[in-house]
Length: 343
Image (cartoon, rainbow, N blue to C red):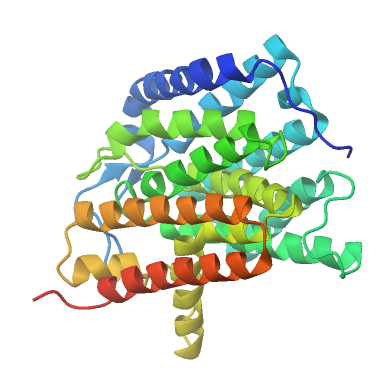
């Protein structure tokens, strides 16, 4: 796939499309809500963070609003939104959304779920721009294999971390806005701009319904494709020479999910089963209110986005190492506070 060119219509797009995506997402949720209440109730269990049956499936509205607005922008401006690469990634996201919808209604087995994820992620990796290299010394085939594994993990960790009211909004809204800003500034490939701006708007439209105590959950139908789209955009950012920025933006999710997985493996637990071991879940068990947890994550992500921006403009390797260390320290402080019982 060839490199993706920018569009001259972005000033209008940055003002209109996110607002339109928010409105469309909110309207779709209102229309879908009776059906989700009837057919897609998430009933609480020992591993849940909610205590009453709550409908899930708002991801249908989030992804539909994102795709529609990207398509409209592409049709109107003939920009990168109509490129084959973006089209393939969004189609792969639809496939993951369908997988998630089935899993929300009737849980799939681990193997079928993983196979479907691999197919979708492989399609996204296959349309990465020609010449995109994150780690240049590696052979291209090996780098693409590593990107495949990394994206599968990212899809799943976004799903794992979507277990608390407003958590996905607190994480993904700063990430998508930052990615769009980097694209508009020319630091990231143009392909990230229409997708992330539309996705950010859709998340804003979803946020009022997921405000603690949530009336509606995103569901696997939303978290799985969200992980694919954002993960693909992060790979594009890394391939543009900004690997540190691509690591800093999702660093809280990466740290919480990965450290939790390693701890569960060490304890010999079945890592594919639902649990309450994530740091954000332990925080609510340790006396933190839900709003305190998500506010802490949101502020942390603003800090990480600022550090990511600094890593782009301060291109020297020593600065990048220092900024990554600062980001790691900030994440460590938050994780330790979540893991500590409040007085």
